[in-house]
Image 1 (cartoon, rainbow, N blue to C red):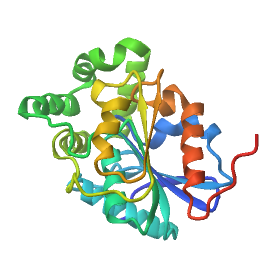
Image 2: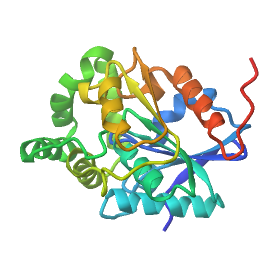
Image 3: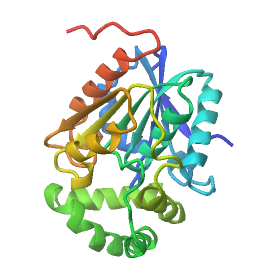
Image 4: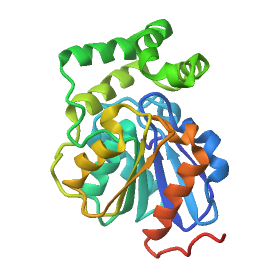
Length: 264
């Protein structure tokens, strides 16, 4: 069993890109025009229960997902690769950076959760269960106040439709525990590879630049944190060109053989 994925580009540096809680890696569809396919090969990889991996069952844990990613890298013939995690899958990227520094050249975390998880209690987990297992009306009623106001009802309708189309509800519920309560298996273990965290100034308070820097600086030896003031939780959809430029500058600087700067 290998996770479903599709690749873009044919560059010498491999990059594995993971999905978030609300959708598969199709969240990147609008950003691909800004990705460099000559220098990088991008492997958009869906975790169990999402997108091209919709029918793959599992325990939906950080360790399981990290093992799955390594199998994808092996399938692609990549001994070394960069990893990009978004929101819940930032934990997977962090875990790989902790445990596989000889394989992971660098890691990018987009709107990441803290290494120890969000500290959710049973009431919050019950709320997330209702969201994960509920119908669209239930999901809209519970998530709308958090995500619908700034970008409007059409944005919320679109996100809910994509979530329904791309994710298995049981997997969604299980992954909620992964990021909301459990966090990393070893949340205080050092990360020695270069790590970039990109935050949104309009994201939830615990995922903004100051808080992310505080939560990651204790375990990351080579940490960069870049905030995008006008973005929320989905910079690849809200500010795609800017996000891609930030990521690619970091990846070029930290490739196994450093790549030359992009031509002006």
